[in-house]
Amino acid sequence: MLDSAVLLLRERGAAGVTVDAVLAHSGAPRGSVYHHFPGGRNEIVLGAVRQAGDYIADMVRDSAAGGDVQRTVEGLVRFWKRALTKTEFQAGCPVAAMAMDSRDLVPDAGEVVREIFAQWHASLADVLSAGGFPAPRAQRLATLVVSAIEGAIILCRANRDLSPLDDVLVEIAPLLERDD
Image 1 (spheres, rainbow, N blue to C red):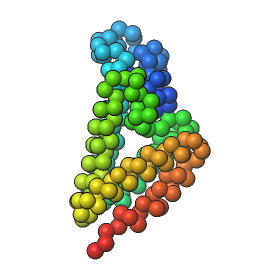
Image 2: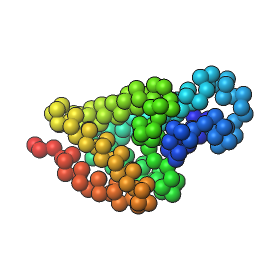
Image 3: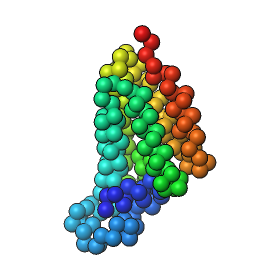
Image 4: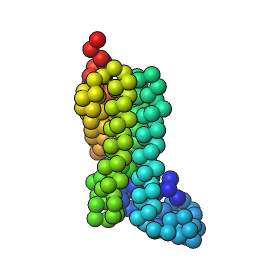
């Protein structure tokens, strides 16, 4: 059910994640919603965005072995290019979707979104620091990477074209090279 809710969130935003939509997409029986998610729709939506956020954070941590931030960013770009292509540009980032349209729809959404973006930012900053960047610059570059990739995902969807992610990768690459 959470996987279905993540996909619905990616495609439709928080407003499009209803109990009925999750059940229709997942094929789960109605009773399982109330058993696993006694908080109903809001619990499903928050669980889905947390699951998606953790998935990306894990991907950053897993690809960051040895402090190679370039490899980490390339991995994120590859992931999003596959995800966008697989869904024919219908599904973007569920965390961004939640950030843009859920404040009135889902209590606690703002706090959860802030936590997820902070987690991604901290993971990237850690990779940059491990790669030899001073902490203040690592923080700024982490902000740039998260912002650029999230923005590129939106442009890719709008234009039905992957080139914004390619452009981000090309332009960010020199910034991720350390000055020794």
